[in-house]
Image 1: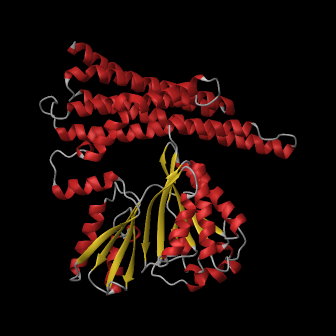
Image 2: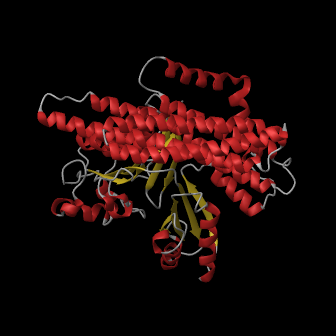
Image 3: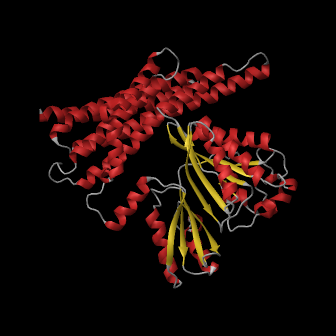
Length: 513
């Protein structure tokens, strides 16, 4: 399975094409990394690069681009609308495929340590990578910007960096390095130069002031255009979709007699986020992602001849069979759960338009969306289980020649085992959730599709049982009998419930036969 990480660094340079090109070239020079997009804004005096690849390659590209930015950008001469603390202002790592958020947290902290040590730029960790709760907020980290931080970092312990000395780099300032989920950076431009109106609209929209829960918003003046802008980060585009953010800005603007001049995306946007806009505004009665030409074509080509799918499956099976500790039973359990969700998704698709009387396509589409989400989580857990147990192995190899070393090793093993228990527990819970959806689907599915649901149900039960064996083995290594006894009962309940649902689906199938 591929392991892909996205990196979206923001640089405090948006007006000099030569400097921007040099920073982008530093990214392109790293093998295994693809530079996907470059967005520069002269008013903000800021450039956002989006690149992706294998984790180690992305880390190297991030360091190289940071080094070039430190060499090229002098923040003492920087003026722009956007708040900033450094030449490379923020450096977030985002999990895309086969990579967990925890992996990106590790990646962010490694990047922060290297930037501090190699470039002499102090580093603040933010979002999921933060070491202090208050620093999860980027706004908190960046308050006062470069000018205020220049003195505060020296005298205020609360402003000391997480990596590096308590002193800004004389020209490059500091950098915020973090790990976060995918977000959509979305700006709405207003046909007014009145910044106070834009600020009032931004306050109404952003979550922390009672607006949309998953929206962060600021107001800026676009001097070159004679306009203002409500600049937003949609940190959960499913809960706060683009169209909802846009409509709220538009309706608030109307209160002040202001119209929307236009909107823009900064960086890349998931296809699903645009699909939701199409569905909302055009009110399609039959919309589903497969109706997008590129989506349908991509899936068809990906499985044409089954070469890629077979290769990926063969690779996973070979890894399981090769005799190493990972991947093991936990990864196989996650794979079984993912197959259960995939079978359910297949039945949803063949059921659309051909369901039993009294049902509707809306029901099938809703089940399909939930099964797809669970399937994605379970696929990720195939690698997450492998990686969590690899940490256990690494902890067991820590030195134990001294009392301090033995204590550190014991604590590391305990922490790693707890982490290795969390993933299969998630697999068991997700597999039961998928099984419950299969049960709902059995009520509306075509009779001919019940055999697929019965197979999926058995795969889900196998996933729950397999995950439970992995959990109990890990808990046994901790020697905590009380915790093991409690968890054993919880797992027994999961298995019992799962088997009951699988039996119901089998009974329904037999009645149809």
